[in-house]
Image (cartoon, rainbow, N blue to C red; front, side, top):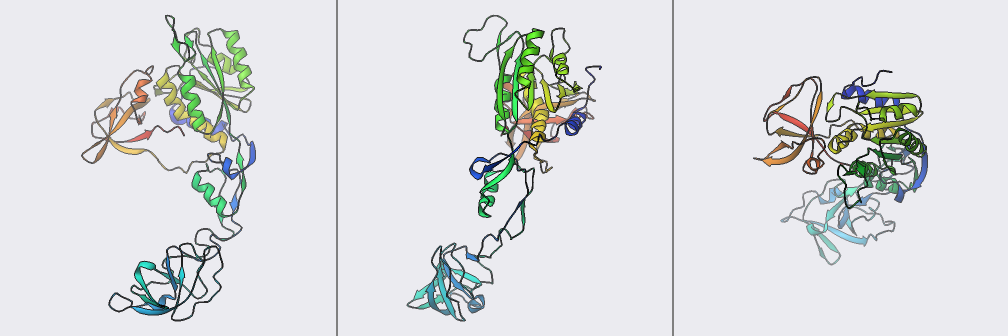
Length: 412
């Protein structure tokens, strides 16, 4: 196989979509444990929600036509015939010319079709003065307005949020089938890399950044992470540690060693894990050209550049997509990028996608994207940035004031 045959960003996306499929490990969990999981079944409501028509305000249940024409100067007069209690059935029918007190959430009594707010009425003994008319259905949620019996509430592939759990609870689903959280293994490579907790650095040593940042990103995406630690530039040890980690995970990430230098073993190690092997070696992107994507058996393997900024940007592009595929997550396809004006001219080379770190500013009621320049080995540039802007491969740069779309950093 010929390595370092560069793919475009879009071609790499297509390779991921072709080769990476949901790993189909599912489990049934209670509602309190599924936030952030991806739904693995269709949910159909077995009942109407709400099951009865109810008031949205404190007031009086009425027949709407009995209030027509009511005003401050010419109120309607209704007979108060009862009170609706919370959590109990409203059994007393409402007849013409009558009203019943009803709290917010109370069940609408038979015959009523509207609720007049308590601030628009006045009680005078058993008589109710109504100073504002209501229309049929006003201040009322009807039975089934929220969810109807037999309605498809959710489809598979949805990442569950707190509001989704609320709907499941409302329809009586106490547990649902979800995809299990993928297990991601991360191994940092390089003789110069040392653990983050090493207090005194020897000449030439750097603390591990990628192992920390990529682990945190994976956790935010709903994965369980196995920390493979650090391995030096020794081929036999690299192979041994990689294979040990590979056996424990669903998705393997190798940080560093992805370029074409003599001591960069990542490509060889990834190829040795199994077929089909290397799928992409090199992406026409800056930063992050020496990116490697492989598949060994049914497991994806991603080789990230060693530079911290490159690693995070590449993971945001490709690692996130791989995890979404594994989880069975099907994004809605909505462009969530934020439109902004770029604050200065930025040159670029045609035939390569450039990703520029930017911070967001408001200027004269407009959003501006201000480039944060720095080499890809500097993690600080990402700390100072709110997101990235893509300069597509067909463009030769951006002009000051041009509208761009900012992909905000969000690792959850």
